[in-house]
Image 1 (tube, rainbow, N blue to C red):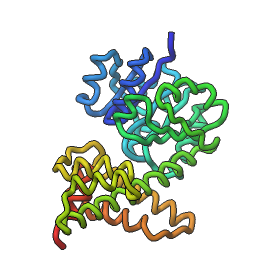
Image 2 (image 1 turned 60 degrees about the vertical axis):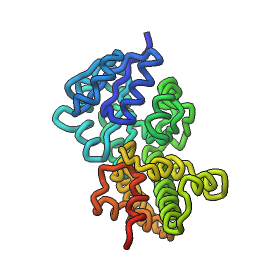
Image 3 (image 1 turned 60 degrees about the horizontal axis):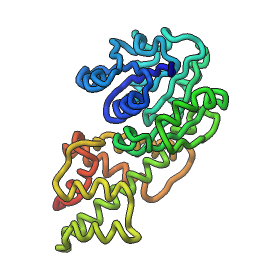
Image 4 (image 1 turned 90 degrees about the horizontal axis):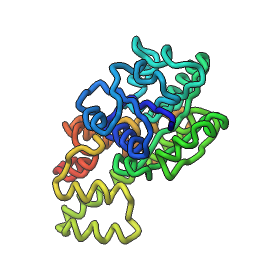
Length: 291
């Protein structure tokens, strides 16, 4: 009988990971504050529980896939948190993009209870998560990594072993996502310029995709944006949060670069302009507006 895993937070990424594990024959227990997020997974065989504590019981590891540090703290240590319900030796896999110091704090509190922490932020989007081809950045003790290697391999064909120090996964994710934010703002800027110059946007993006200006996030987001498709796959608020956290980490490290702050401020502008609930490709909409 394969190990049973729990997933708390079954939105785009958590739901995709749950679907991936179910397709591989793993028993999966799930919890989400939004019942609509669990219905499809229940039809595929997932067991839906009413609280993080109930969800994590009777599983060997719990994947936490919520939005931010406040939600993570509630899942772990709140009134119905899992930390008081799971046995020693249980592993908590932290997938949200949160500040490194928050990961370190959670890891210390869990360690005091005999619960292992796996700092494992992810990248690639829900389609890649469902296919098992997303990136997984793992920082945890060597023994914990070895014990749960099968889970990591089931979730991702691109498992990066960052270090044994929880917090380093978060640092790596922030570096990656800051570059994603910079690339997306840059792609939106040049496409807005192309529009102003009277160029055909589809043809311009065709050229960029086969030339030195190409970026994965630029192609993925801008191809939809120029077609007017802003249905949220990743809300503006996510890269707004991630670029802000990255710049806080940079400040704490005494580093100042020329582009990160500009990307952070652009996502903040998009939020203030009422675009927060749209796909982050809406940066193109923001930059296309006359100023």
